[in-house]
Image (cartoon, rainbow, N blue to C red; front, side, top):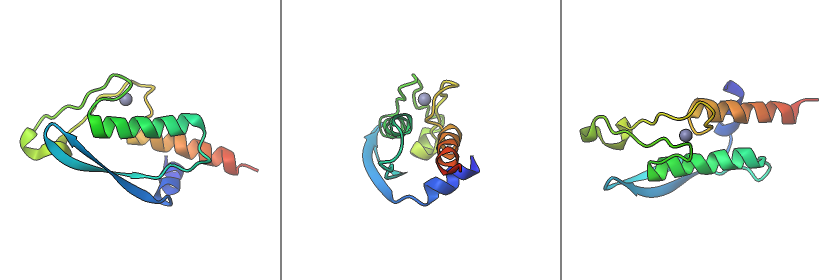
Length: 103
Ligand SMILES: [Zn+2]
């Protein structure tokens, strides 16, 4: 995952505004590189959808256990093969970057 985290840290960022459960927010995310293969582009789109609508294509929905703390306390239970969670996404990016840079 570390390789993915390093790769993503070097990318330009953008903020995607959204309103969810009546609260305005901003999804801080990267600008996905054109060189990314389709599965990473799709994973990034899915992350954006999950973060800005509260619903992930894998079927997960946002859970707000402590509404008084707002969206910061939100969580989602994703399917095992879903690439939306940070760990899975960063691992996939790292795998791709290592393969791209392999001699
Ligand atoms: Zn998911």
